[in-house]
Length: 218
Figure (spheres, rainbow, N blue to C red):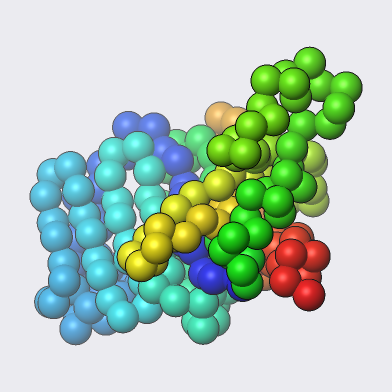
């Protein structure tokens, strides 16, 4: 069974001053509404935070982060409205990298089968470490990476305990990171191009998650 994890977008910055995100600035540029910045809004010299029913926005000296409250949003539209406008209004900000983070967990229908199914991620027989991890209590994961059109994809797969589960059920977490470095002198258009690829990244990662879910639970 597949369940939602966490989805967010991160733009890494250098020597960024988060106090630029005042209530007036955010409303003036139509990034958030007046209501948004009157309720759950934090403004300090080091941290600016806005929480709405849709998103969690964070601005700190080394990054801007946008998290999503659920997976039923038009996430692409929200990204362009919030982060796209910020990048447009701050074209000379020294941004260094940008990334998407998406995570899901997959649990087997029968929790007793977890150890058997988890062996899917066991190192191959010709791996010199395999002989050290053969006991019934062993758990396995993996790391995969490759270049994709929007940058680099990194995928970490590891066993986790399902939060708040009555019997401490085990699951597999798939954590996807799509990343692109932004060398000094990068144009804002490169950031906008990456932001526009959210739907592609989401579909790519979801396809892999569903492939494992199908193998485990059909």
